[in-house]
Length: 301
Image (cartoon, rainbow, N blue to C red):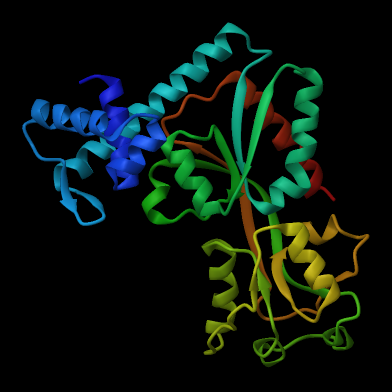
């Protein structure tokens, strides 16, 4: 089977719609339909069932998709490896970074790398940790810097290296009424209004703090993916947020404060995440070494 045919199949599988897949591939719909029929004829099975608004994969398509993703990601890794071998000083790496890393530590590491490798091309992709992990497993990223408590379904496909332990804390504006207390109870927190980043990692730990006391967790008033926007809202309202303490440390110029000790504060370990079977390009290895240095310096503070 041609690699091109696998690419067509994967696109239809992901889009669940031949017209949408054709647009993404820059082709017309009949050509894509013909390519899928050719794959079906070669395998002797039906891959998709037609539905009113698209197509649904069969059990055969589910199996082929799993293998096709692996082939596609390995091919991408091989291409990056060849490029890196051709000129290690140039190269390209794609880095997925959770909020704490992209704001506080990764910029320092990347700056150090690009001073030595001015022709290097580094792509930094910010997203929720679970989104980054999915992209890493697909081979779309070379490495991820994020919390390392990986969901079980993904854990067998990645390898992790702990680099940083940081506390998740409650943060509010610098003159928030709760600052008058020396310590907060769960009752102090349950009726507050909250703004939280999206994604399951922070949310699970936030909810766990309330569930441990037999309470339903508050529903956030606002969900905000942009850190600058999130902290600006916190600094100018009575809303609270729950994020890594390191992110507050890098915003000393803002009207923000750590709220008094409370029951939902918790420690979190984050670090380097790689695909278990992936090749790590030389440029990525250099960046990883810089990240390790920055992490050690931060831990020593």
